[in-house]
Amino acid sequence: MAPVDASPATPPSVLRNRNFLFLLSGRVLNTAAMLMQSVAIGWQVYAITGDPLYLGLVGLAEFTPMIALALVTGAVADRYERKRVVAIAVVLETLAAGCLLILTLRGLTSPWPIFAIAVAFGTGRAFAMPAQQALLANIVPQAQFSQAVAWGSSAFQVAVIASPALGGLLFIFGAGAVYATSTTLLAIAAVLALMIKPPPREPSKQEPTSWATLIAGFKFVKSHQVVLGAISLDLFAVLFGGATALLPIYAKDILATGPQGLGILRSAPAVGAALVAFWLARWPLRNNVGYIMFGAVALFGVATIVFAFSTVFWLSLVALAVLGASDQISVVVRSTLVQLSTPDDMRGRVSAVNSIFIGASNQLGEFESGVTAKLFGTVPAVVIGGIGTLLVTVLWMGWFPMLRKADTFAKITEEANSHTKR
Image (cartoon, rainbow, N blue to C red; front, side, top):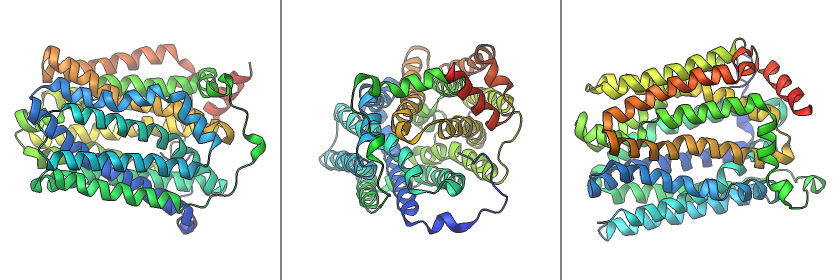
């Protein structure tokens, strides 16, 4: 995510904030662990079953807790100490990774235990994500916030780039080596969360728990039509256009690159996203934000179609990198809107809603890819997804004209707030 307005020279002051460094380091280690083991899980599941539908079921298993617990996770992040919520959630992920290690060492022959563990991972992420997003604003002064977001996004993308490739390399020694490493990284991330010392929150802002407080995040997003348009566009574009769940099939059957090649393929979108993140941290979006966002989503669809037909490894890497770069622009717009529009006492609940959209676009998108690949074949499934993304772009341009015509982030936020007051 890029700052709304940052000077060309990034001052180093936010990097002297120990709390920020603990939060950032923990998030990077958590991301690295999850992505490393995703390579091993995908390869194991496809090697055991040979069925693309099972690859989609992994994503569905991870996403289900995010939907089922949506009302609870945001309220927990707003009511309880956020660093402890993050730590407990990451401990759950650590235990799940340890279970994967034990099952693999004992000789895993069925995918169903993996699905059960994926539910545990999804539960941990469902609690961790809103609390992490809300905690950032508690530990970083407002004057340094955009700087912190830029550093966070850049570090996250570096982890996304390196981790799948590292997971593929570790797979040379077996899936157990991947799971042992991810378990260790997650344990360290849990400790780092506990080392954060945020200032105490004001008790007066903690409302009594009720149905109204639980659904407040959904009502907030619904009342901000521009915010709703931005996050729903990202949801459906990635939902239809996501092909990452099928990368094990491309690596094994189409590109013939093995698990090491699979790790590189998984890293390619993050390379494009990281380049865009660094660029926008240096030169943030200022004008024509709406048209830029829609153009980026359309490019995402085109890159998906190119990847679908590619049988050349380097062309597939380029297509995936363009796909990641275009998606990052959508992330910038959505995340900036959420940060600017949400009061602190609701940030956990609104972040939970945002997490649902993110999870739906990623994990549910993996399930959609697996189902369509089962029904129509791998290449047609990815082509259909790319076409679906282009169709969504056209529809959303007509349904959300305020988003399409938006010029600056400040104008988007002002219009969203005025619409909420009506």
